[in-house]
Length: 332
Ligand code: A2P
Image 1: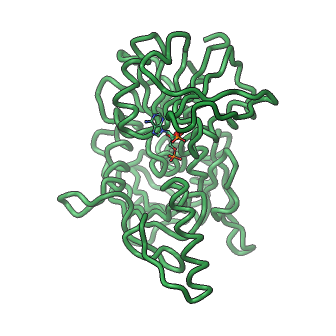
Image 2 (image 1 turned 90 degrees about the vertical axis):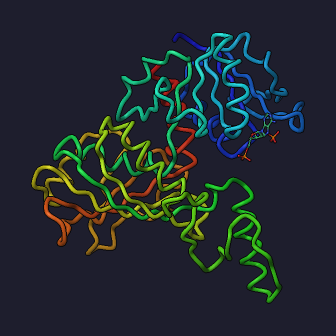
Image 3 (image 1 turned 120 degrees about the vertical axis):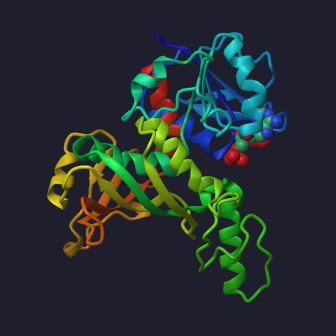
């Protein structure tokens, strides 16, 4: 697409604001930019490339002159308005989970399965779950080299994954504890300050949470591996931004740490940061506001055959959401 007209639905939200930043920083060849949000935000101004743009209220008629619509206003809004955008001729890139598992909607990480974006019969492309994107950025190069069979993972997910309210809850609890004031958790089921919570999203019948099952189902779809086995425990931690994932991955072929590090050479979007004896390993603060995911602590697993342990960190607002969506727009 040459100089497409782009709309951001949910432009005032955490991911929407980051989308604006990504379009600006990546010098996206835009024809025109339209900012859409709820009636609460209509008339507000946001700056893009030094120019003031006015936020408009989202309606079913918002997409007449739009080529690409980046949606990040929650699943309900996507379900209601994405079909209108697609019918008006826009390609929808949807950050919610509304369409991810639909057979006729491609689920795309541009570094992994860019070709999938070409086949979009409903004019909708889905942006995967943030923890899934970050994990797969580390796993895809290893799969290419050694053939991925199974994944056992635990995530350490930042509070910004719950939007602005998650950040406020952590801040307020830290202040309340420091000053001896009482507080009641609202966003999270338990105290998040100075604690970790082994629940992200709601529980399903088999004891896994929805977030944990996204790693399985979305992972299979993106990697094109129908039989991939994935078991994950998703944990909320008192970190503002950037998710970390501890992964044990088993492969078809023999693996070792050096061969694994070599498999990342030249792969876009993922950098090896792995010299533990010199205190060099990725931490969430290293990736915050950055495009690349970082992988380290790579070692041969001593329990399973042909298996590696590793630690991957990525900014979930950026590569886990806004950047990935803008990268999809770039390959259209
Ligand atoms: P608004 O700021 O006007 O409420 P976050 O996930 O960070 O909470 O952001 C959610 C985004 O979705 C915001 O931009 C928000 O706009 C937008 N949004 C929420 N409800 C609606 C709605 N009914 N119509 C359009 N945009 C909405």
